Image 1: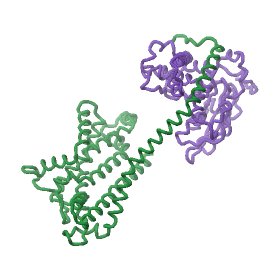
Image 2: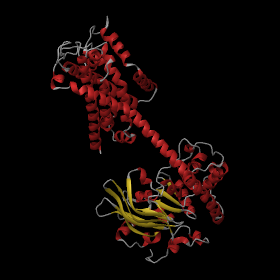
Image 3: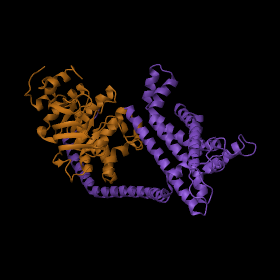
Image 4: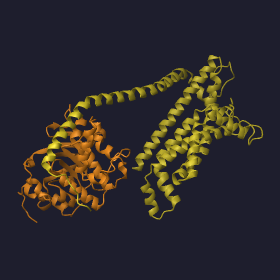
Length: 285
Length: 311
């Protein structure tokens, strides 16, 4: 175990070092998403408090911590999914230079730039594989058949699903296996060409083989998409993420807080905060 | 596991991404104004639809209240009716009659309906399907037909009771309430997660005990609401009572005799050309309205309370 907290992100981000050698990948430290003092509350209950966090561009940032500490809540705040569930978000969220919660910012435009993949695969059950993939494009007003076709193919390629489904694009999406459905959902999110992809425990309902495929995919996607990944699986965080943000319930036992954030290797090998150390070493949680 | 083939060169991919990203962004921006407009129109239409459906209700309540409240006094609800032409008098016989008739109807319909619902939830298959279909059809049967049916079975020549009686009205109302109770209870029981059934069974608990402790307890708020709404519906029904209960001016508490009922009082008084009688009809309508309102509110409160306890 190295105790080297000055390790640069470049050195420490574990899984796929060669991708950092890609020309133009100097944007490591520029944030695709910035949260500044973000609070999310439902009614009187503040679920998560004062989170200041960056998702580095074209990198995977894992949000880890025990259940109920606000990881998912923070993730959903990034593309305004709380708008429809009565959650109130204060503080500032920036996606690129777009102020997500500014008065004149329209949620639809935020969401077309920030895709989301959920815990359980949720392909639209009445649609075919093809219709699922292009659903976001169609809803965003893309009509051209050739564009839809190309985008679907690219997205399915990107989600490593093309070879599996290219001969049955018109069969119902629900006929796919769970892992394939989840990759379809990733393709559906990717088809809109988001800059940011939020993933809320995308493997929690999948078996280890399907999980391995999704993890491989996540690593690969981060060449041109910024990924925010909520996970309960510590090993998954170490395997796929470049940066890790550790959340925990605060002292009032009711409100989640960001305890520590840094390169994944640092968080797991040499955390500053004793609470992080206890959690990642498995002493609690 | 076959090796996954990813698109080749990330750099060229970035170019195509850039182009498509721009295209999608542009399309989203261009279509957003139209999508927002369509969204507003849709929401607006829904609001109008709600307003259209609420308007008659509000008008009805307002009108009935304004006409009926003048008739209301302590005497109106505690006295029995006076003969035509004699002032004063009230509807106590009708109130007592309605309470007894509907109460008995509930005593018949609630257990039967709940058990039918339980059967529908527990069993799949042809019989359950037929029962569910039967309940749906029963919902559509005109209430006057139920009245005639009850008359034929219980009152008419050669039938079980042989004369007009409150219990015959209860029977007709029970038949009317049954499909409402069955469908509402089934929905409530189905809303109890299957996991909980299995959790109970996996503990080695008898099926009947699981039904009692898990299913019925979990569905209780829904069951109470469904049953009370069925009662509220039955209280206002007139047609099933016309051929069965007949009506009575005296205070009758024996359900084997003809009885009064609120809806019958409205029906018979509203038909008459005398302002005094019409006034009684309005007053009774108002009492009935209040009764139904109270029942609905009680249903809500009880189910909210049970829901809170369940947490």
